[in-house]
Image 1 (tube, rainbow over the protein chains, first blue to last red):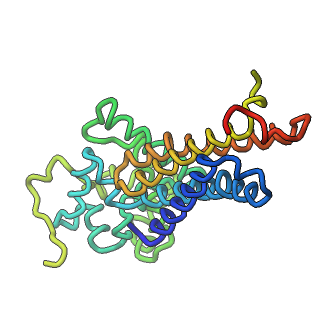
Image 2 (cartoon, rainbow over the protein chains, first blue to last red):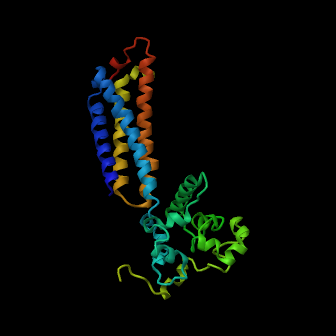
Image 3 (cartoon, chains in turn purple, green):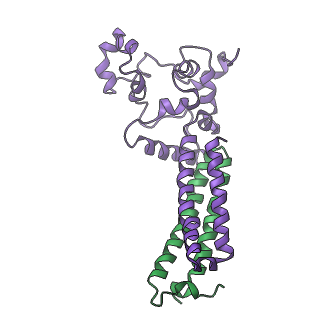
Length: 205
Length: 78
């Protein structure tokens, strides 16, 4: 639990205490002070708690450990520790090319204007598949992996732009005509089917 | 019987009960680190809290439009 979550919980407890007063003795609202307190306890504080809760849950859903807490995602979490630099997600995660605590989100977020909303709806769909239907095995990204998720960081980077292969096909990469990960260039991704036959890196060793 | 006849106190009790329940659900969802905690918060907690706030606001409207202006003093709940 982070400090901000603790503050939010304290605020919620205060809101519950205030709301309890109006549940036990609604006649308190007869006085002007009671009316102000009722407005605070039954409107302002609950609304703030709602906004704070939504914000906390959205931030939490961007964390790597949140993503891999789903049973179907566990092998994808394990693949981040594969001791082989040809595994693109593992190399990014282990070398902190992406923030380690939000690795999944950094590479899988939709960076368009309504992207965060689309991501959350997609997440709810996956939860539905996990608990109501059956999640596909292996998990597939609807519409395929978008190059923009790589280019969000790599585009404009010197070593990426000056690479002769990249510069020769740059327009096909930016227009998404050629995939970064499934065109034979960087095609070793999570590869969860092979996890039983690979060596794992253990942090601190 | 109209809603107004029920009295603002009845509305306040319903509103506060919904809000208390919703906030308790929110605390559980914040302490539970699991993908389902978001579902619990968004579909149960937020609905209860939102409904509680709405009932409270409706009670304010009813008091404001009460012909005697004493909508807060009538009703079966004392």
